[in-house]
Length: 418
Image (tube, rainbow, N blue to C red; front, side):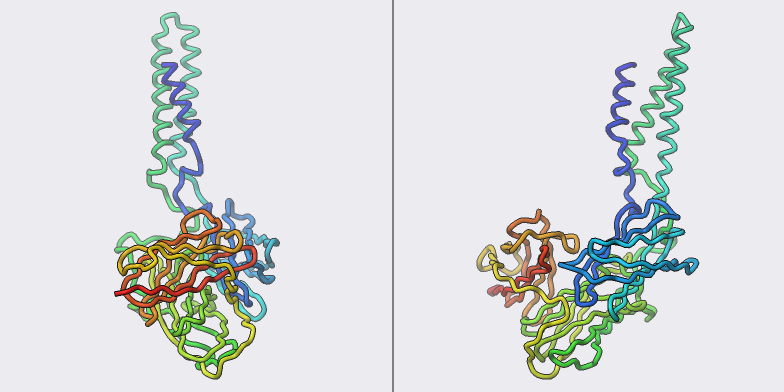
């Protein structure tokens, strides 16, 4: 019996880890990439442990970020608080309740409206059984010891101790099984439908520019409007996908121009980002996003830039020239439909960006295909990607990674024979 009690106690000590007890989003930071005021940055809304309480907002710049004016509004009661944040200087805003909030982020004359929910873990209902069982077992063990001390035959003490051991065993079993046991949603979570199948209509899009025909060398706004395929209403339920509400890839038809940016939500169903193109021609757009309960989507569009080629500095976060970005493709002549390995030599130590050490974006020359894969290993002197080219042809490719100097883009082309 003593050995059993020791074993059960050891299991409780070893396995009672609060971090492993809950598989919920409460307690996790929310990271949202934004391209604003000519900078690429990531906003980090830190996890909230109590409400009312502080809400910390941090800014990570690649390589730097402007000073951001913040306005936090509670959707439930309209309460508003203000603050400022910059790289290395987080803002601390006060929240009074859980549930839906909107964070307005401003830099210069650009503004993003970021909806999110303040979540607080309410704890597992199974904790009552765990700690209740341990408490009762403790009382019974004390009672068993006292009974044994005053009862010569000791039979009553044995019964009491056996029941206490059973209580410890049940508590330990729940600790072990708790990660797989059902738990309730955290406070502030969005109500989930229970009487209908999951899934929502795919997003329809309209891609435009402001002005309608931008000129080479001049700043313009790329705008994506999202609509529900069934109702025609603006889509405003985008899930955070690889640390962004949406990823926008813009390339010139000849592949010489490339941007991977993260547009701002300026209104329900509307995304905008400022760009500048240095040459006229046709440009292709690809929007990667994920709608709640509907999985990922890739939306396409196109626009035309007029005028003549310009040689001017760009105001948007242009990729750095890759002076030492050697690229190796294995096999040297990749085959369609078979996986190839792409290795890229880095200049500097990569740091996490969009949750990954590196990104590889591949576009078919005709623009009808776009692929996006990630480096899943540890950051080092080389990035390694696995990619399968779907069909013979010529492909434009761009490998991207972040260092303390900013975002580096390594362009190259791949020929896949017939």
